[in-house]
Image (tube, rainbow, N blue to C red; front, side, top):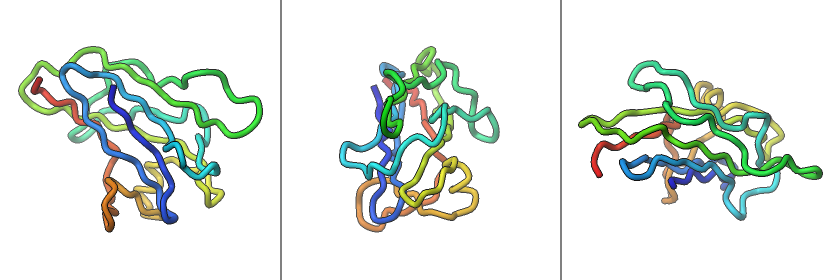
Length: 145
């Protein structure tokens, strides 16, 4: 299983990159264990795959689903899980892309795609200092074993 970790560090949203491999077609989205408690899903669904366009193809697997019951008290921070339909048996990398619906510690409820389009908040990719980069949240499906 591949993991996308969502965090809030130094007033910036942090979303870890992820790749699928031939023998591993499952993805789980979760909040970092010590993430700011004011960071949570901003609506249902919290995770959606975007339609095909440009270099991206439609996600052939299951729709991302939250695991467990909606919390009775507190904010919804359940993990989301999606399973791919089949491995990439071709020779080229295939790309999918997704969107997140989040409530940020700033009080805003936004879609990640809106933040990226407007450049209103930095998206941190990776863990090194100065690793701010604007990217589409994409998932390459690697053809190699």
